Length: 96
Image (cartoon, rainbow, N blue to C red; front, side, top):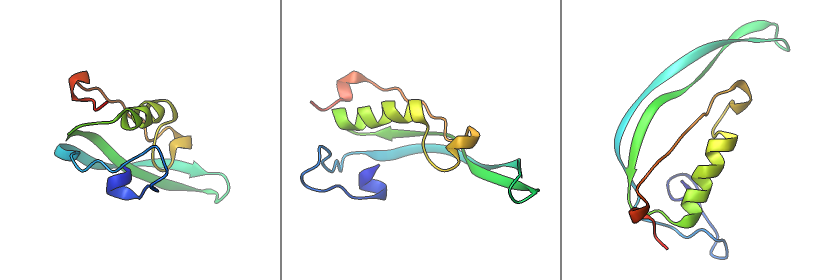
C-alpha cells in the first residue's frame, strides 16, 4: 500500500516491494444514508464495496499491516462501520 499510495523512508521497517500487483478486481461504489446531528440533515456516505486480488511476494510487514487493518478497519468513515476488510493468502508466497 505504501508503494501504491505513499512513500516509506529508508530507515523504516518497510521497503518497497515492486512485485505486488492487483490482478483482479470486482468493486462497485455504494452510498449509504446517514443522519448528521451536527448538520441536521441526511447525508450520503459512500465507499467501494467488493473484492480484489493481489499477487506478489508479501513481506512480514505487509502481512502485519493487513492484520492490523482487519482489526481497526481501513480507509475513510470507519467510525460509521465502513472499511471492513479481510484477507487470506498462501504462506508459501511470504518473503522472509
